[in-house]
Length: 223
Image (tube, rainbow, N blue to C red; front, side, top):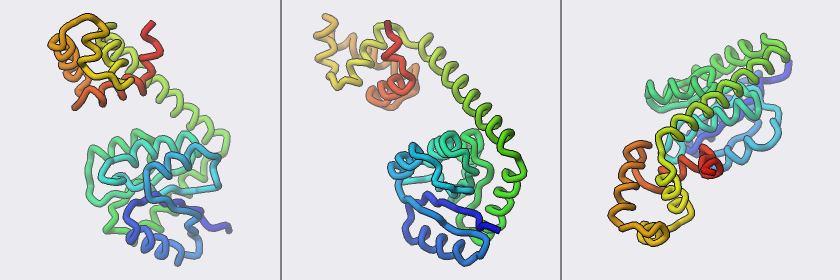
């Protein structure tokens, strides 16, 4: 029987080396690759599936819960089974990981349980034939697309056309003074618009708000 092919995304190099060595000691498991940054993982998941059965994904990468979004990307692009790794049982992060398509999670301090979890996850998914697995992935993609559409509509209804123009100029790198000059309004008015935007979107900064709108594709829809 072919060994279960495991890929690891983990930013702690010492722990990564130790985990790889530990898993490789099991005859039915083989670590086929590792990356240690979100950027490397993001680039990797845009390429064709290299033949990975189970992905071990650290939730926290460079002190950010980037692993959640990466898990979703891996499921959508590779159709791989994802197990999240976490140092502490953060219920919100774990719940969001399951929403992103992860199958299981494991506390890092209990790493000795990972071989059994990997086998169980692999067996659980392998029992599903290829056609059904593809149907599941298509349904997951459909639900994510529907969720995105609802989010776009919600934000579109929330942001006024003027606020959208202000955000687009911020996204292009213009200062509030430049925006005031462009629209022939006072700097105070621009600041009021920005204040309303931050409150509506729950963003910590105007740049963060502009990035959210850009990611939703609303700058392209303003006309």
